[in-house]
Image 1: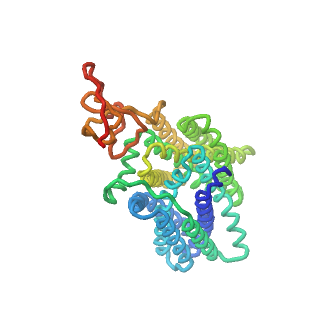
Image 2: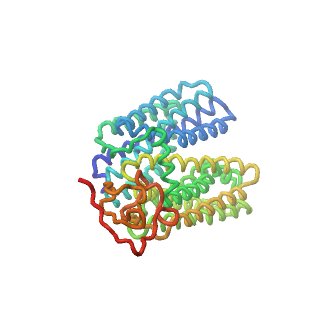
Image 3: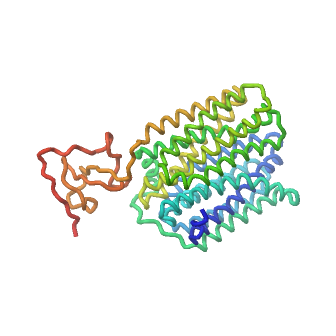
Length: 466
């Protein structure tokens, strides 16, 4: 991992990500305290609504923002969204009504929904080597996990000497530092984009996922992660405080176990992915999630004993490790499934669709537990994770090469794309690294346009026009 930090551009981008994450972590703590000041005992409802607004912004804004980003320099867009986030953070201490919190949260998360996919699409261009890119993905995962572990500790230390509204100043400072780092960094420009309006470019990412088998499987795996992760993020307090009867500090310990498992997996993945495929790692990790949730259901259905607390910590660490092993290689899967010009749209689609999964599972985990109990909640979420993992295994071919032979029945002779093709069965046959783009609208195979070459046809050669 230190080797990729020798790349000056990546080092600055990674530092910008880290300082922005620290600021976001401080804002999470401060927003909880602000909600309590405004709503008292109704604070959980305020935070729940804010979380739903966050997911809605991610689902709806990311594709449109990235489509607009194709017409704006990346450095300008990323710095501008950081400035918007800094302004929102600075305004949060001034609010006096709950509805103002909701408006500012939407603006904050809409800016994040524009920043994150563009940031993700820039990294593979900065680090074109696959091993370096894998290390960068692990570093990014590690940054998220360490933020979740360290930000509450930092916030607690700051609250010992300042009031919570000063934490928003720390958030604004983090975003301003991120903007300064991005502005000082020379970023690669996007490849020549296809023509098309904003709505067409926004819709392309979704079409890319729908048409590419491994990306459909990736979305199913995101649903499995959301099912297991929702049990952790929504129901930990109910399991720890309600079922096990432990003190408030134990909630942080349990969440820390989840983060520790995720960190260990992120550190191990670069070496593991040199030895095996993304598919094998991600499906194996996802298959662990329903098994662990089944164990959690048993734990929640039985009378607590001396074994219950260590068992919960082990289960949360296992979920963290499995989720990290599914999420971290996702960038590699997207990278090999889209042309350079379409990477922003692909990452935006993944960002939006994956958060759509959380938008389904968060309410399920939150509403089912008080009504049906923790054991049934874990069982239902485990069943969802199992179904999603089985669907991913079915959609993602075991043999999944990058290079695929396919027939173009619709391109005219002499088209530049057919420079190495030969006549075959009413079209032109060739093979290359296959992705969905302006020349390839369907995946080759049983659903694709490929036809068998007639026995009597005489293969011809095709030259690109000069």
